[in-house]
Length: 170
Image (cartoon, rainbow, N blue to C red; front, side, top):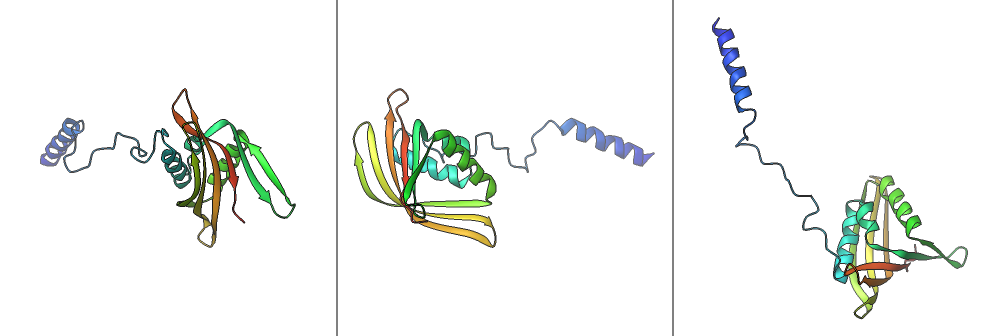
């Protein structure tokens, strides 16, 4: 009978203290993981910070918030000898497919090579290094330049990318 009494006492203790915090376990983090990693995009550096976050964490929602409704992506198809472009919806779809098909993406922004900034529009040409890991033996490294046109949305006071010309030779 002492084993039964001990078992009942143990169950009672577990039930009694199950609603209490465990002083030996760390508390659950209530704030989002992205706190402090994201910008409010009220300055141009915030756009680059959020862009890097979106790629690092493969976050299409954050990526989409960088692009204006009239966004255009442009790159040079060297094999065909002409530029190719598409709009915002297509770019978000393609970026989502990229994020889903890779294990990891590392984006590093390098020096700003040229910038022209006024109160409502900026053109920034900036170098970058991009490491795309599909799997441990399939890794692609891209070193290139982006030529971004970024415009300030007067209603939200946020800077949004309206045009991205990829100036990489990849």
